[in-house]
Image (cartoon, rainbow, N blue to C red; front, side):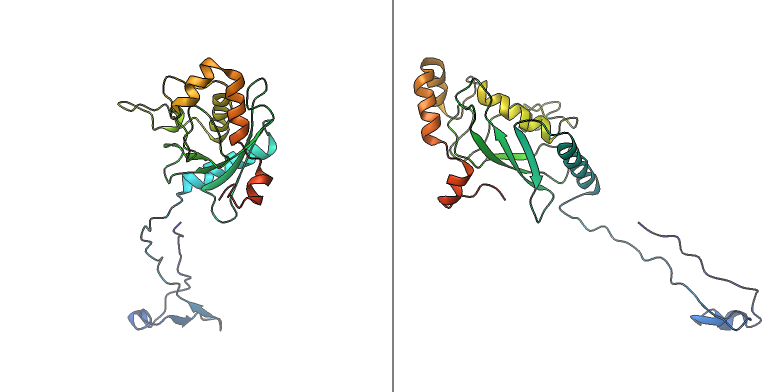
Length: 215
């Protein structure tokens, strides 16, 4: 932010133009007055984090810390506020009950006007999650006229994590990334749960196996 610089002045000097090029001059009372340089010209340098992005994420972090939602948590990584690690607990009365899932969220420079990129780090068997942890969820796609997604700038990190938690227990089988899981969800819940438990790894187990749980 450019500052307004004022030249410290005293009574007019009889030297006039001779002093204009001199960086210092006498104030007449024995003190030396330095002429302040003109304000520097700032050139815009693109960065990965805009001011709006930073302020928005800081505000969301405060909300998550002061008003936590049971079963959900998220914090920035140690090096970059646009990269967060999150934890979601599986919803009760579903095949995912009491299971812990680790996710990462990467926020674009124009957040909250574009959605974060969210990935499951925990291996998960689910109709709307592929083997790489990518999630098929409408609010994770850009919204607006002519776009298929439902993202809106009024949504935030809590909205995303709540939607993912709900998705675990209410998959969208009309748009699956894992076709087998979609069919099994509808046909055999007992077998489906066996698949979920066989694929799932708790965070401690993932670390023991050398798998990353976040950024």
